[in-house]
Amino acid sequence: MKIEEPWTEKYRPKTLDEIMGREYIVMRLKSYVQNRSMPHLLFAGPAGVGKTTSALCLARELFGEYWHQNFQETNASDERGINVVRNKIKNFARTKAIGGDFKIIFLDEADALTSDAQNALRRTMELFARTCRFILSCNYSSKIIEPIQSRCAVFRFGPLSEEAILKMIEKMSENENLNLTETGKKAIIYVSEGDMRKAINTLQAAAFLEKDIDEELIYQIAAKAKPVEIKDMIVLALEGQFLKARNKLDTLLLKYGLSGEDILRQVHREIFSLDINEEKKIKLVDMIGEHDFRLVEGSNERIQIEALLAKFAVI
Image 1: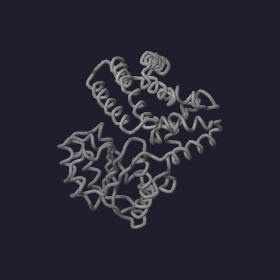
Image 2: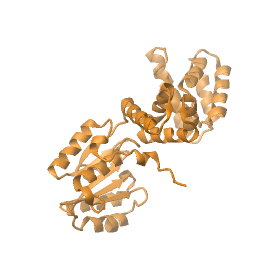
Image 3: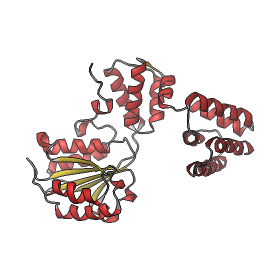
Image 4: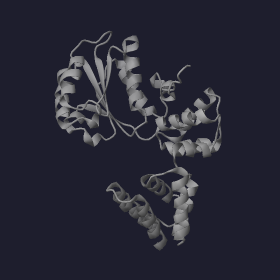
C-alpha cells in the first residue's frame, strides 16, 4: 500500500517563482540569486506563511544540484543550547562549500534559542561570514537579540492574502479531483487565517472523508464553529437574551468541542462585523481581552465565557 505524501510537501513550491502572495519578498530574494551572493537573513512572521519554503527555494536556485550539500536546516526549538552553536553549527560553517562560494545554515524557530546560544551565534556569524550565510526564521523577532538583528537583512512575512490561499486550494482541488464548493472555499479561508499550511492540511483531511467538500465538513474537520453561529450567540447576548445566548454556547461546546480560548478568538473576529457603533465595539473588545487574560491564568473557561455573555447582555 502506497503511503500518501503530506500535501504540505507535495505542493510545496520548488522555485521562487512558484511562491504565491509574496511578490516583493521573491523579488528581493531573486536579486541575491542574480548576484550569487547574499547577507545573513532574518525571516520573521507567523506560522505557515512561507518562511521555510522561501529559504529552501533560495538555496535550490543558488546552488542547483549541490543545494543539499550546501544547506543545513536546524530546528532551534529542539536544539536550543549553546553546545549546538559551538559544535554542530560551527563545524558545518567552517567547511568549504561544494560548487559555490558559501553555504547556508537555516535556523528554524530561532527565537527559541537561549540567550547564551544567541550570543555565541553572533560571533560565529562574524567569524565564518566568508564560508557561510545564516537564515534565521522566527515567529517573534523581538526575541532575537539586537546584535544578531543588526547583522541580518530582515524580511517580514505577514499572513497570506485570501487570494493566495484561494489560488492554492483551487489548484489542489483540481489536481486531486475534488468537488470543492464555494462555501467550502470560504470556510477554508476563514479557518486558515492566512496560514497556508493550515489551509492545505484542512483540505487534505477533508479529502480523506469526502470528495464533495462543503463548509459543513470543513468546520467539522477544523473544529471551529460557523461564523454565523458565533455571531448569533453574540447578538442574542447583546439583545439581553442571556439564557438563549447561554444555550447557544452549550450547543457550540457540544457540537464542535471547542475550548474557551477557541470561542473567545472567534467572538473577537466577529465583533468587528456587528452592526453596532464603534464605542460599543471598543467596550466589547476590552471585555474579551479581560476574559482572555483570565483564561490564560487558569480560570474555569465555562464560567468565564458565560460571564462575558452576561456582560454583553448588560451593555
